[in-house]
Length: 322
Image (cartoon, rainbow, N blue to C red; front, side, top):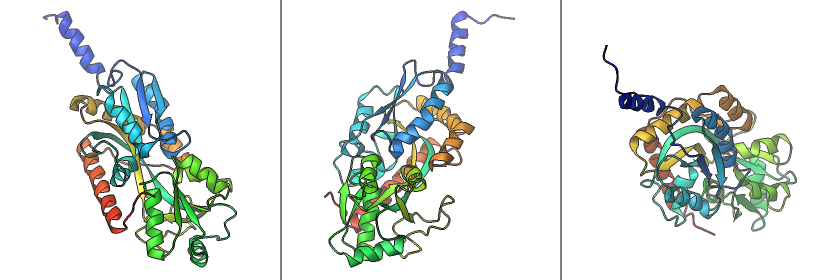
């Protein structure tokens, strides 16, 4: 039997390892998060970071770079070598909502590629505990009865958190003032303190506050009721079907990243997402796992569809910066 030359054996071993431990190169992996600690995106990044480190047997560091509607984080990721060592972890609103109203300095449909679609969060209509309305219908009636006096918070300009309030203003003939914050955590602090009475926020960051009585859930801004809150109606049930927002959370890379490397990163993250520990943490925080393994092409198609839907919302509801 002919022996394999040493260099061939080395190459074969390297190719076998490429699907696992060395899929991301030999440097620590940095997961860039376009939000401050404590927000929906940060929670998601920290759920997957430890498990990803175990999967690839390399250090994985979560790095928060908030600001400019997520553009700071995206542009930082794009400025780094496209070698898999610097990735963006985000909810899709950074790419499909914000660029319609802010000059972000990148093209989300050309410069960025999704490599893992992992979990989903939905939008909730919440209030401070001191707000007199007990549910969505009462809240809308109360705002109508107090014109020019009430505001709603969002976790950033140009996001569904703003879109939802703008649509409700138009459809319900309200005049709530929009107040934007750089992330969920600072906005929620204002709502909990009753400085701003109302907010549209993601289910992940609101869930523990609802459970603790720190904010009040008024309605679900999604197409269907949620298993965690079966008694809470959707805004569609109250007559506002356009207030329907969810985003998927995932991992993104520079479009300059070589296709074989994108596939390897995709495979590693798919294995992470299938782990029981990850699924249990999703359930505990309000994320819903995305079922099935979407291909790179399918994820790009999903991202574009979301982008185009939001472009239409911005046009139809004349959503602008404050």
